[in-house]
Amino acid sequence: MAVAPGGTSASAIPARLGPETRVVDTLGAGDVLHGALAHHLSGLGRIDGPAFAKALARAAAVASRACASFGTRVWLTAD
Image (cartoon, rainbow, N blue to C red; front, side):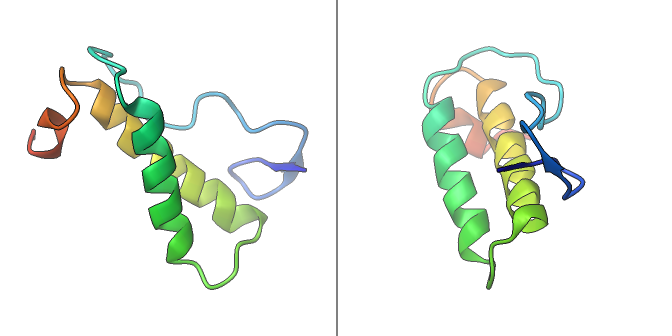
């Protein structure tokens, strides 16, 4: 079962979870998404539908920031 960002059951999670981003480089975006998702999930005592959706939205925001600059580490220090 997938969970919508509002925490309700749904057949799919919306494709657009993160902020609108001017994409410059997607290298490493999947790795960043998975790492950020693991980070946000690790802080949860119990992973339920709404908590997972919130963690996924936060991870998508981090991954979108990584796509906004060229290179795999520049975004860590960019404003």
